[in-house]
Length: 307
Ligand code: ADP
Ligand code: MG
Image (cartoon, rainbow, N blue to C red; front, side, top):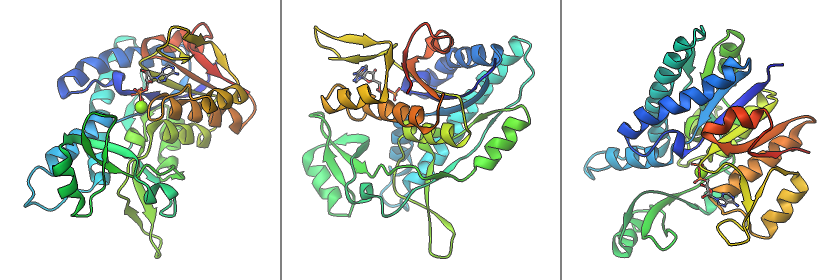
């Protein structure tokens, strides 16, 4: 029977440059179309790490022009990533004789200004600088950090997503038989002002957590996080590395405490998967390779997280 599935696409589904993206989305479209062809109802979410860094850099290259906020950069990334995905997926569905419109929803995601993440920006973005350049920039009120021995970068807050503003739009598209692309780059971060208006927040939301919220809110059966590894491992990259077929929330917590999941890459995926699996009985999260999505949902590969 067909399932309702939220697919979270990682960096490898989109490539690092505009040209890479045009090529990558063709393969990505095949993986998504496989699930649609198998009778599943699919909602697509995606990351935007390299893209939002590139846009932020380009938009703010001229110091004499007004600063373009990060939320605007994320909105731009949703637009052009959505364009390529929408274009490629429509073509792939057409080739398979499947009549289904694909539509990108510019999605705002509400965050809480009281989120402790705003006190402690942790997410490095944009290009690398020398320490001197970084400290100069810091004097203008911009947060900077040293990034894993690779140099200095601007850093921003990464608050938890609280609510998806355009969720009813996504629902309407689903009930109209469309394939929605939503919550790109974790969503455009907004917060509610005192008069109830939504204002842009200077932050980026983790796409794994935003996809989880999307799956939970839409009452999805499965959340598939497609990335650059076929399975989650313990002792990752070490001689005693062990790939995991399944993971219970309890095991995931224990492995997390033992430091098996790298923060900023595998850790948010495992946490998002656990949160989804625990959110209601019968819900399943799967972490696997983009090109293994179909096999993964059939239960023959990937790491599944279930209660
Ligand atoms: P995405 O763009 O899909 O979000 P990330 O680079 O953020 O991808 O995260 C996926 C990466 O996490 C993998 O390619 C792998 O190098 C790394 N990783 C870190 N810890 C683990 C682990 N325990 N098991 C598997 N992969 C891991
Ligand atoms: Mg990631």
